[in-house]
Image (cartoon, rainbow, N blue to C red; front, top):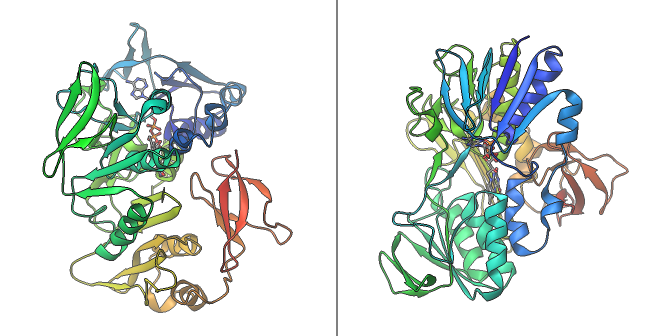
Length: 463
Ligand SMILES: Cc1cc2nc3c(=O)[nH]c(=O)nc-3n(C[C@H](O)[C@H](O)[C@H](O)COP(=O)(O)OP(=O)(O)OC[C@H]3O[C@@H](n4cnc5c(N)ncnc54)[C@H](O)[C@@H]3O)c2cc1C
């Protein structure tokens, strides 16, 4: 019997397993994951920290569903090594599994801070549920926190800790948010929103040293500026692909496992998808990781199809979808494009009366290649389609453009909402109203519809 092994049971791995099973009813499908606990929505860990959701609300009970589908999940099993030429995986317990095809879907995580031996109470990371629960258990005695990094983890931590009334200093090594993704105006909107919420922002600054008394964190000394008293330091940068177990497998793993547009590695039968993979960007050809929940789900989909023998090209592009405090942010494709042939349009944003809304489209050689939405993502789904199809500027739907750039126009796109978890664009039916609870067809999350001032719906995670 053909055996397909999925190495990592996050969103990419699970989606691939599901797809293979649907295409190939007879094959054996095995997911190996070191995580003991059931699958959960990582983007919701900030909400857990905020105390707005308990762990039971973000856990998805899909183990039963997977086992009904005939997928075997080896939970709590760590992969120790992989031999691509022998097509064999070795688990930490010594068990050897041979495969016909295998998918590396082991994600990324924050690198340990230099010098952190794990013996100072208050130095923490926020990559998974056990870490989030550990942080939550410390919060009773925390008054001041330093969060290091501009990652999704860092912003999740800020969201959670501010909701608990904890003083937060966000220290980012760069001079602005996500250079290459956001332009200075867009970054300033996020910076202003964070400051308005009482967050102290230190840009261009790194962790100099940590000051502990006994085994208790007392302060963080930044690389420039004054000592910051703190009982908590959330280290949320830099991120790196989880490839330590792949040593010797020659998969170019520094920035991610290199794959082609079918998500194939250079080894026969071996694929990679999700945050661990680095793939050619559609518009530049540059091989880059394209992290994020929805990208991982989509890559899992394509990898699964290819593993089951259905040749499929991944046509996605880098996309960042995140909530910064209460601001939805969607950045698509070449969103901070520079160079020959690039043109940008951002209307008169930001408007005085809407200081936290910003929208921009980027064109290259006359075709739509990127976009940014902050504060109102109503048209993000439509523009994403234009980017995917390479629609020319003159062929873009004028109604959508007017709605984007003239925000007083009543939304004609009130018929769609983006899933708060995976940002899948869902249809809202005529009989749906404020408060209606729906399930996302892509990731299964439940959400509630809320009306925005322009008449469009937005989806809010429903616990
Ligand atoms: C706090 C937080 C907030 C986030 N917010 C957002 C957001 O707002 N928007 C967004 O798009 N994304 C967000 N993300 C990122 C998003 O969760 C990831 O992009 C997504 O989970 C990647 O999916 P994946 O399947 O590639 O990897 P993962 O979800 O990381 O899954 C990888 C799996 O592999 C397993 N694994 C790794 N190594 C081994 C090994 N050696 N043996 C066995 N198992 C192994 C791990 O246990 C894990 O279950 C956030 C993440 C965090 C932590």
